[in-house]
Image 1 (tube, rainbow, N blue to C red):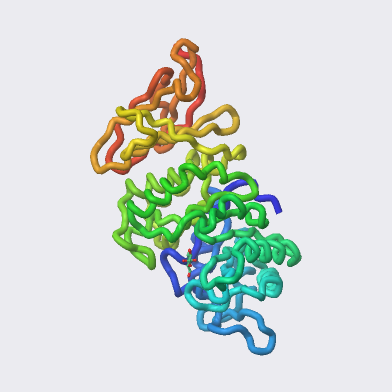
Image 2 (image 1 turned 45 degrees about the horizontal axis):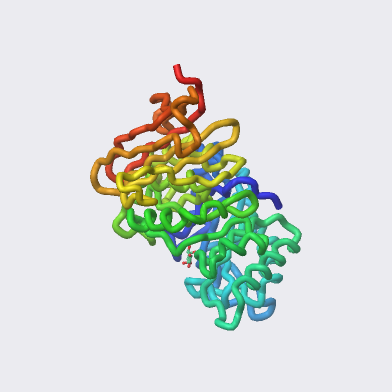
Length: 382
Ligand code: GLA
């Protein structure tokens, strides 16, 4: 199965935690269509932990859906999702129990992969809780990778071991199509900032067939739901979404999309940001910020730069501080000198407007925790 672009969709966990249900999933699938999320590229509806009964079926050994949450079973849920032209995601875990203590796939990998195939599943998130100490994590992901490859259905393998055991080095080899690279996000500035910083030296590992999954977005949660925490404001969400796009992360929405506000909706459907995220060359960003004291990364600012296909580029100026800052980018760091006669023409991804052409340096004044993001082209200087 080829996965050439970071997967895009929605997952039940961040907001609904232990309470996924058929009704919620159906309403969310309807919202995907009504709100234009499908047209913007979102396709997977993923049911996370807590969908099954507490124990496997005694006779068949299979995991069984909780009839209180999914009265018509999982196949019916999958059929509904498919009837909307969307794809169906589910969840299991490499250990003996899932993180919320439901049956997991350790020792049942091949049987569970067949069960998911019978349900019509197209995407499996595969977690890492309750792994026996004696078991080798890499082998467990290999096992499920093989199980999915032989189950008779194309199922995207979304590995979720939180970056443990330097999984960015080996997860691609297990057949996984994405690897969760960090611990769980919560809806706060510190949480998403730490996730981004932790991936700065690893983003080269996010490439076609196995993308970095920096966790489900908290964009639009405003402190509500399971991982609500302190909540963020819209500036944070604009930054978070832009950074996930710059880093070619999976884009899994985590807010309640049946109640999503207009501004958030517009943000997560931003065609320029999605174009950056989904760029088929999937080249990594580099930080080209230039600090006054020549330290490698300033504590409070970043300028991520990324080459895109079709001769385009992306720039993201990020102010990590709580004060307005002037942020510099020197084009000579990109191999471009003022004497070359070319400059980067910046198109603001939020307004669609061209804001200028820069050939020696660009200076942006960025509000606290905000980002300025541009898609750029190299053009002759006038
Ligand atoms: C782990 C994962 C989360 C979520 C929960 C479910 O913590 O990292 O994303 O799936 O388990 O219990």
